[in-house]
Image (cartoon, rainbow, N blue to C red; front, side):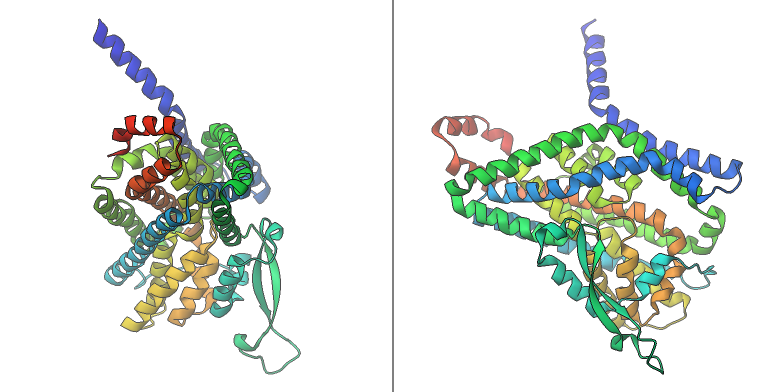
Length: 479
């Protein structure tokens, strides 16, 4: 009789721990199923009617986005302030090395697939125009790269919580004949949306300064640590809305699609190529890198990230998913100092899925336009796609704007973005999921590589009675 009771107790414990994860995953599938049923069984829906359906999901997304700025600043500042300069630099070096290797691997994998499968040959595409494409068309690659650096070194930290710098170019219509875009007039402008790069840079510098101040900076350190914990408490409340939120977001998106069958027919091979690339990178390349660093396969960790990945798919935003990712990794026992530094930085600069997608998209469009490209062009696409992915904001469909940089490298018109717009929203969900998964696994990897260093820092800063506890628990720190 004892064994059945134990099994029942384990089952109840499992259900209690994973009920939210299962509910979120069910929400994703339920939203997709409901969206397909509604779309196929009713007439065309108006924009307002779709807005009504997406309203619960929009509220969920707004609540998550509200947490981004205070959580990002407090997490990075408290994490770096709690370490000495040498330790924080080691963690930063490991994280950035991981991000660089995985991003470059994603780009190379994407290029290999698109040059092998050649999805652009024989494709028949109905071109569409949107306001997003028109705005993306009016940018230059040098301006985009310089704006990236300008946003890193913000001139107003308060303004950076709401706006980011952008160089806008406009044609002087009084001059005839028309001038090339490089000779258009330009002006500095502020675009809506948090300047995450600037906030990250400021938080890193502030955390480093607080760490160097030691006792004098303890009051500030306690403030940011408490603020970070408060944001995580709010996150734990918001998480319970995620199953409902992602269900409505996905249902609304599917209803919004014009023709699912026509889209798949015209862009089927492009869609398949990107999906193969994302799957191979997420469960192949990253898995190999993770295994080499930890001597463990990552799949059980990926299973524990199910709720985070489902939320990333539903929202299409790595930044909005950041609070949930941190909360999940905390529950998995990852050192908070590593989590609160690596995840915000990763959500800002590490976009593996976006890098792969932009490399594939650029060469797909070149194939469709029957434009020949050399090995040098492929190398240039690799470099530009990597840079463009860093500059892409962690928001839905931000890659469309940075795609212009990559198209310019191949010598294609910015308006060619319209060729892939029909499936971009769906691919955006998948590549965001891979981005978030890569960030989370990177954090686990960096935590593994930094365990001995973190333990030594703990011993240096610990009181005598704490050293006894560290010695007693030392076996728990070793994997």
